[in-house]
Image (tube, rainbow over all chains, first blue to last red; front, side, top):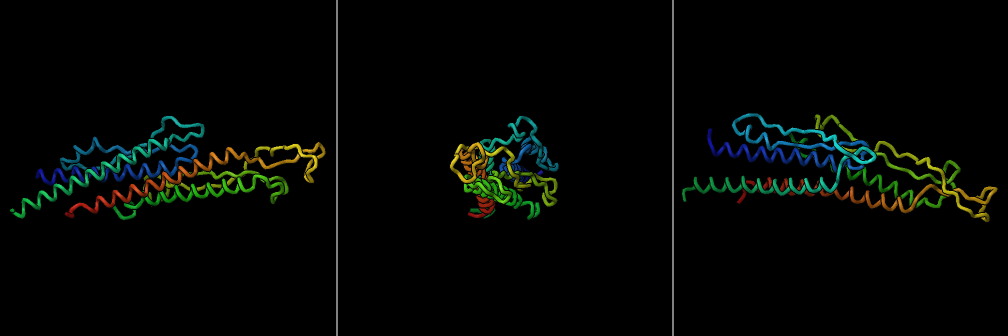
Length: 112
Length: 140
């Protein structure tokens, strides 16, 4: 297995996972006023390593049934904003990592 | 990942913003009618409330839901009775039936709806920075 491509798969899978998590947070925030709504959660970190070996990668979407206010809604908007900010920072960091890798490759190939 | 799914977060956040805006309009109507003694059904104005509902639509393909206003319902709480014998609408005991609008409650609800609207806006802003940083890959 080519170590260069191998690592690229890991990084691009991580971006896909973060995008899926962003969609879940978007739904949680949109439904923060919906009675009885239970929040969605996306986990993908544990799959990254497995998928690196050529396995399939699909972020797991799960429903969090714990807790909830008097109307049964368990979205805590502050927590969702926190998750949103983490997604944003990680996404930008990983994008930057991919760019740096690409720049490194170009440099190696240009033979200067 | 198809283009429909890529922009899904924007559809979801957009549904949240339009639902919260409808909720704000209902609250505004409640505040505006806090002293309306004769509404279309003859009695004092009854406060209204927007009921939210998750929308699991087909294009989400088992994804996470949007949101919509299922209905705007009247609050059947009793009218507030205020003693005002000189009023033309006063009953035999001198009480006037006032709308069941609680101004403090409406103001708190107004603030909550505004915050919720803004958090959906934040979702779209974060989406934009994510797309921006993805588009930066391979430049420079």
